[in-house]
Each structure stands twice: as C-alpha cells, then as structure tokens.
Image 1: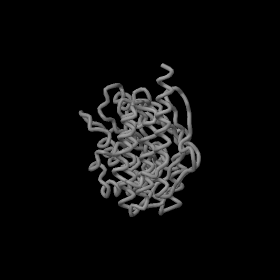
Image 2: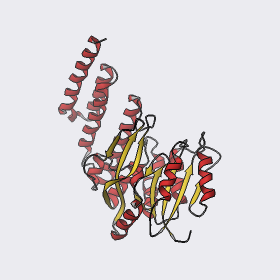
Image 3: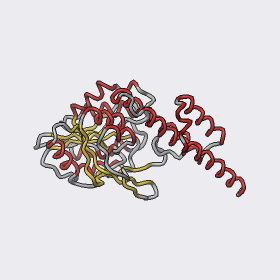
Image 4: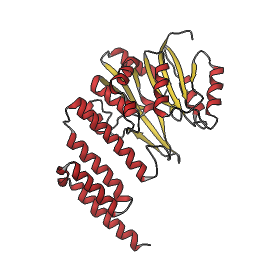
Length: 312
C-alpha cells in the first residue's frame, strides 16, 4: 500500500457467503486521503465464506488481510483477535453481512476524530434492512452522545463506528469482556466504555446498512431468545451505571428492563409466565410496585388473550 495505513476496517464474519462480497466492496469504494486496510476475521465458516475472503486477499494483497484458524473460536474471540491484528491508529467496525453506503464515510469520521483529540469514537446513523426489504433508520430519535443517554438506549450499530485503536485496547484491558459470558453482544459494552471515558461524536445521516436477519441473536423471532438478549443489554447498562455512574440510574434502568420484558410477554407466552416475570422484578426492586406500565400491560395481556380465544 503506497499510503501509510491510518485506519483499519475490522470485519468479522461467519457463514456470510451470501453477503460478504458486498461488505468488502463497500470498503474498497471508500474515498480517503489516507491508507485503509481491511482485516477480515473469518471464524471457520461452514459455507463458502472463507473461499470468498481468500479470493479478495489474492486480488488485493496490499489492502486486505485474512485472520482465521482451523477451528471455530466463537464470536467474542474472533472479534478481539481481529481487532488486535489491526495496524491503524483508528478502527472502523463492519460485520460481514453489513456494508457501508457512503464512499466518504471513513474520511468524514476520521476528520471528526482528528479535529477533536478528546473524542474517542464517532458513529453515524444506519439503515436497517430486514429480509423482506423493509427499511428503517436507526436510531429513530436523536443521535445521543452523552453517557446517561447511551445507558438508556444503544445509539450505534456496529457498522457505523470509528474509534481510536489505543482506546479500544484500553477498554479490553479494563473491562475484560471475556469475563462476562452473560453479555450477549460485544459492541454495546465498548460504546458505553467510550461514553464513560471520552467524548462521543455523531454524524447525523445514515452511512451504512445493518441487515436485520431473523435468526440473529438480537432479532430472533423466538420471544424467549429475544427476552434473554434484552435482559443482557439491561445487565450491561446496569453494570456500567454501577461502575462509572455511581448507580444513579439504577431504578430507572430496572424499570426500563421490566417494561421491555413485560411488553414482550404481553404478546407472547402464558399469563403465568407474565406474572412470574413481574414477581421477579418486584423481588429485585420493591419500588417497581408503583410502575403503572406493568398493570396496563397485564390488563392488555388478559384482554388480548380473551379476544384471541373468542376468535378461535
């Protein structure tokens, strides 16, 4: 590569043969004044993913590197080993089934970070596209950049972030996410660490696509699996609130956890499952007895069940 590598795009992939070429091409189309490398972490896929990645490495040996092994190491280990292999001062993240849409994305984000030394990461909006082709913009509200707002809602998709590599490595050393197997995602803990330890910036327009695949851990049609994922996000937020915020938002985050769980259970499962989850929440935090949303959702659950039974 003729230009010094300033930024590394870290792409983790597993069984993404259907999407990987589009993801790679979206990196190659980026217009930058600096050198960009693409580091692909392939985790022993069972489809044609590795072959596609190797083909691109052969075509662009100065721009693309492949990190892989003879055995599957799992999402978290693959994520970290690929980041550790990156050479750039900055890291952009991109899953193998997502892609960049704006050819100036990386240039604009690096420019923002270069102008603001106290800024650890910046992100953009994204387009979410499901398997039926439906499109929505994420986040739907404002692009939050303060720590407490980030605790309430994950502001960024993985494909939208550029961060300082040295701070990413500090995050790994300080938080040790591998010690938290109950955390079912690797991106939110990193964003929250940046929110607690640096400034966060945002570009208020969509510049990447995140594919919403129905069998992914975050968008599963199985309500039990979806509930476990939502609880994991809540566990992460509560951990960060305790460690970096003096637990100032403890009750608010527990109420949000209960409302999300009971909203999901108001549509799924039996009445007994709803009541048990409600009881567990009250046992953990008795002040949730004044949470009116739980009562409203319970009556909605009963009404929906009665309507459903009468229309069988």
